[in-house]
Amino acid sequence: MTESLPVAVIGGGPIGLAAASHLVLRGVSVKLLEAGQSVGHNLRDWGHVKLFSVWSQCVDEGARELLARAGWEGVPEDQLPTGQDLVRDYLEPLAATPELSSTIETDSRVVQVVRQGLDRLSSKQRDGRPFEITIENGKGERRRMLARAVIDTSGTWQNPNPFGANGWPAEGERELASVIRYGIPDIGGADRAQYAGKRVAVIGGGHSAANALLDLALLAEHEPGTSMTWVIRGNSLATVFGGGEADQLPARGALGRRLKALTDAGRLNIVMSFAANDARQTSHGIVLSGLMKGEPSTVGPFDRIIVATGQRPDFSFARELQLDLHPAVESTRALGPLIDPNFHSCGTVPPHGWRELAHAEPGYFVAGVKSYGRAPTFLLLTGYEQVRSIAAHLGGNHVAADDVRLVLPETGVCSATLEQVAPGGGVCCGGSAAEEAEACCEKPHIKTAPGCCFPQPANVVRSNTIACCG
Image (cartoon, rainbow, N blue to C red; front, top):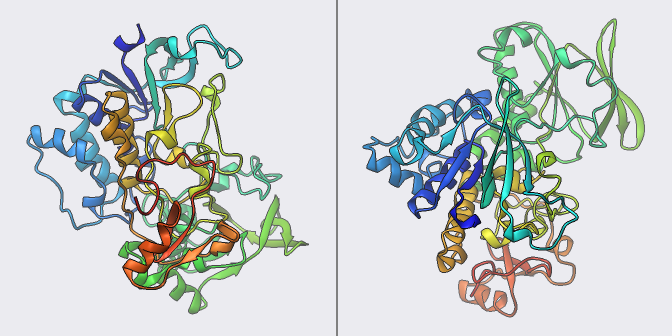
């Protein structure tokens, strides 16, 4: 029977290790499969970057219990860790605990997840068959394992978005790979020589782009000739500048303020409303072509390009499973309306757990940043509560699984109007707490900002905690 098989956790980052922690605490057999040579493999790529969240918001409670048993000395709860700190001081000690060390298999890239003997067209008795997982090591050798359930926490870091405005690589993007860097390079450290004295374009309108621009500005103070151009597809800087003092993550608010000061000082060239579709190497440098406000336009020349346009999920290894993806965000269909950046930028997300993360494929869950698909607002706290709920469900404690509680620090910025999110149905209470509660309790509503609610979308699975009042 499948119940005797382990639960497979794909990915050895913070969320994957948290999932494994909660499973072993509930007595559920687990195997964690990490593609890299050690846990936290993806985090090492941006180990130089500080997180917005302080240590107390970066450590999962289940993981903390296992670490305490092993005599872990803890971390400075009120300080901001870097990615490298997170790996060295938290993930590596957690992976070494007696309860987890034997469950982790590194150099184990998952290349295929199927229902044993079934393709996605076979709909009968799927939940009676185990998952069959094909694993490949760095030498190309393959093996298979069976699992009763799968929690995919493999993330999105290895699958960056291209800078082509239509979602595909721009013409010439692949050919210029040697001068293009995706994500957040270590401009002040290991990658300094690549950017010193260079003309650099940073493409993207989020916090990764902000980090790169601020690092370039610091480099320019010491390296003459270093210049930066910020290329943005949108027509507003409000989201990346953020809520300032109103941001409940002070480091996130400070990042926006520093970037705004850099802009106000005229130290940054800004190109807005530019949709790139072509990149070419000329005798003067790299020139980007595209549309600006619907009209043909070019930007450049540049020596190097940093693409900070986010990442997207890769479901290729699960293509023969029956997934239920939101058509725009690529999260689960239930979660999509709550995180869609076209409408939602308040920094708040209603509590959600195993029910909202379950796919049509019984026993297959996506958690962590991959659960958000292409939405950019994920925080570690979200993923920790996700996997706590999933582990409780797989462990048979359905009360605990449904008791989903999530309080996230708000950004202080909300660009969408309630009419955009829920035409004709929005409520901004604006009065006392009692008045707010009364307005929200007229029917199920989801809280999006202090004193603001909108009706719960019809296609969202309602748990006893997803509405803003019981």
